[in-house]
Image 1 (tube, rainbow over the protein chains, first blue to last red):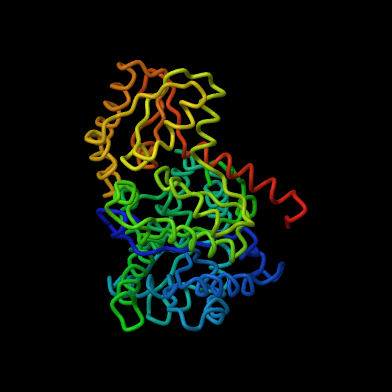
Image 2 (cartoon, chains in turn cyan, green):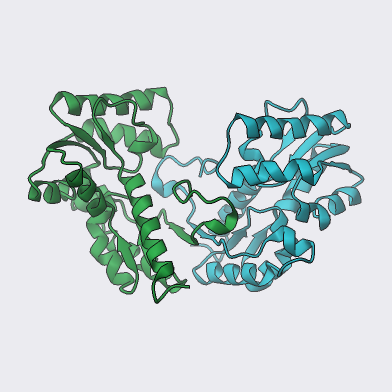
Length: 211
Length: 211
């Protein structure tokens, strides 16, 4: 909504949302300890497309490990890939060595590491033991000074280890890590996804299938 | 999400949202200058119920003028009426003379005035000329000090005129009017709706149709 920047109600794109707490845990699935979130994501995509969604966005980095299943659930919709859009932005900015703040599933599946290494960009990854408590606190509604300090410490540690940019690669992280905290650029996949989704929605409105 | 107060992803109710900028303007419709929002609201309710929604909430006070049409679109779902829940809360709190900050449609249709007067509660209504600019600014993304000051002035004026409570009866108003600004209680229909919707959702989970 903020990125759309509309002046009145009618200036915003139509948005259908499915917030589903029954999607199986991504970290447990990636570790082989629980069921795949794929079928639930496919059903959600199908439901949204059935209601008319032409563009799909999934604001969860880790769940992108199952984006193929999501897309299979709604083959006619355009999926805006948050990881691909972010990797593209990092490559365009010519960063050489990026720090990654991500949960266990994102790291275990190499969602960012794979495409970044393929472009010759090095990665430094924050350890799960430091990331997981911050994410858990934000999920429980805590965005206070203690959580913010822990998130800032994560970013600064990555910079000390040589990162020339930091990717806040879990949607909870940008909620407690502002751009002023890190001495290097902070890359926010959520904001990149919002912009890319709006661009895709406008293309969809203008295109032959629009209206 | 804040009212649900969950500790992890799985503690929240499933939420389906339809943000539809094509719903006809409520103020124009109430003034007889534009089409009714009823058919669009009925279609949205039917779509959400078709995806499994058992409880419906509509966080727009003015649109409650067409809640009968909304409910007709999804007769099996339980509609949580924001206006009725708020009037109930005001009556329970034994307020005698409440100030109303609402847009033209809400006032023209007597959505709050009718049921409040029926309970012997007097109303004092802020004039459109003062409310409309605040609502327009918030819709355009402005929640800055100027807008907050204008909203606070609205509440204080109603108190000067004798209100012993103020209802922020347009969803844009609580975004720029905190509880600390008014010397009398501020009644927030959006917060009341969130609480009533969660209660209804929990009943729905526990009931025979739940699961």
